[in-house]
Length: 107
Picture 1: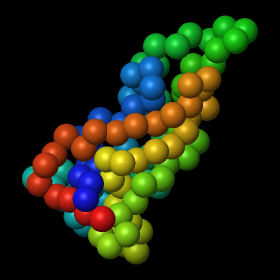
Picture 2 (picture 1 turned 45 degrees about the vertical axis):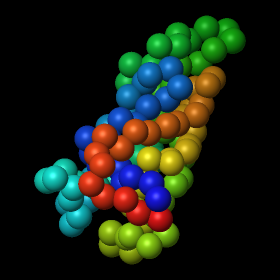
Picture 3 (picture 1 turned 135 degrees about the vertical axis):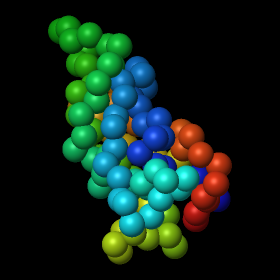
Picture 4 (picture 1 turned 90 degrees about the horizontal axis):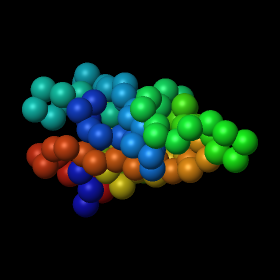
């Protein structure tokens, strides 16, 4: 089981660029809305430490996010889990997350 992501969770690129996910207010953990993968895809990345050059590109946008719960859904879509993976538009395009909460788990 993995922990559910909320709008307070840490979602970031490999170079510490931060993503601010959109939440779903129908389900909250300690008053904080949970997040679905579609609340991460398409979002901006801020603070990526890579600089643009001829061989590197800074992460600026999330291109994709996957890693949703199979059984816990909000509005018909699985909530995002801390096992999230994804890609940005940067040279090191991975995506990772830390739930930051230990109350709600899902599979």
